[in-house]
Length: 107
Image (tube, rainbow, N blue to C red):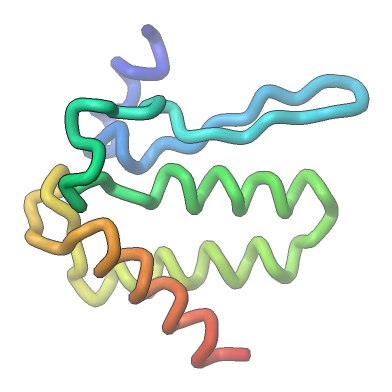
C-alpha cells in the first residue's frame, strides 16, 4: 500500500520498479502488478517493467548494461514520449520500441 501511495510522488505507478532481494536470490517486478483491467489495450506503461529489468541487471553486476537501459528511458522521456498514464498518447508498443531503438542506436 505504501509503495502505491508513494507512486503518486513520481507521477504514476507505471514508473515504479521493485525488488525483493534475499541472501541468494532476488525477484524484480513492477510495483503495479498485472493490471488486468487494461490488458490487451496497448495502454500499459512498460517503464516499471523495464526499470525492474534494469535493477536486475545491477543486482547481477551488469552495470554497463543497466546504465544503457536507464539512458534509454531518460532519453525517451526527455524527447517527450509519454504513455496515457503520464498524459501522453504513446502506446505500450510505442514506448518499448523507442527504448529498444535507442539502445540499438548507441551500441
